Image (tube, rainbow, N blue to C red; front, top):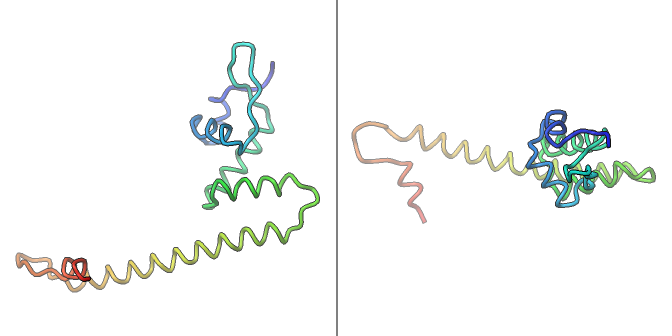
Length: 132
């Protein structure tokens, strides 16, 4: 049987073997063929699929959304509007998170600026955290 081991696949894709097994167990990628000794053996298609998955996950797509993207990627009858809509929803989620992080940063910056940071016990940071 040709192909390569999960360790080789991990090196080729930059994903840990544990993550590859997880993606296989959850059905995100098809199960590997098994050699006579029971070891998983992977081919070039697994490399392409996992590189796709890794790139999508690096962009913050959920495992569920990656499954949807993989289905669209493999569907020759897909409409790009479906792909764009999924990516646009994800982008909106990211922008919402960024706005929240900016708000947290600004609040924390203000509190840090107001704190004397000296030997006195007064601390606007703790006062703010203790507000109801």
